[in-house]
Amino acid sequence: MLRLKYLRTLQLLEVQGDFEDLHLHAPNLLYLTLGKTEAEQSDAVVGDKKNYLKQAFVSLTSIEELTISGSFLTYLSEGCLLAELPGVFDRLRKICIEKCSWVWTEVLGACSIFRNASKLRELEIRSFYSDEEFWYQPIWDNDQAEIEEPTLHHLVTVTINDFVGLEHEIALVGLLLRWSPTLEELKIVREDADVPNDDCMFRVLTKLLALPRASSKAKIIVI
Image (cartoon, rainbow, N blue to C red; front, side, top):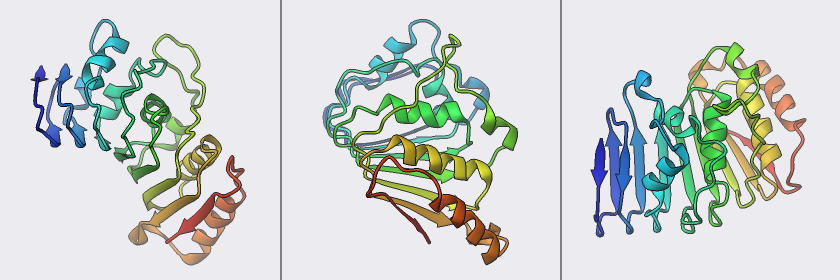
């Protein structure tokens, strides 16, 4: 259990390790990184999981940038996809998702939980590979209720790093284009060491440009 209470002057916090319960009271916190090292510890707290989310994040009124990495993605999304947090993220402008395992539920969970942040403008995702079979499953919460896709009303910029052009990466680009009615730029940064040839990337780019977009201003940039 990790408890951090009344840290009124703390502005930067990084937590790595095995924790099962998290209480934060740091109203001036600006930058927060949460990660876990043991995947098998990734089940959410037993009991009221919506209440768990509130107790973990309710006091972060000044948070501007949030990084979620590793199995904490699973911990965050497990059973919490239907939760709606209080409107405390009125200064959150950027979310970074690192070590993304390309599991629908985890990416959707991270996006949906913070979808009502009025100043959220930027989303950054760093790729992490998984088997293709996991990318074609329906999205379910723990209670087996199918999850509606979030609408990211304020998102302007998306960056996807280490992109190699696999089908599940293209699928994620399609989701983000569909979820983001105010998107202006979706930047794809290639992992050059894993890109087989320019012809292959040209075919990938053709698929990307053909994806439907909720925003008429959305541009796809590949670098």
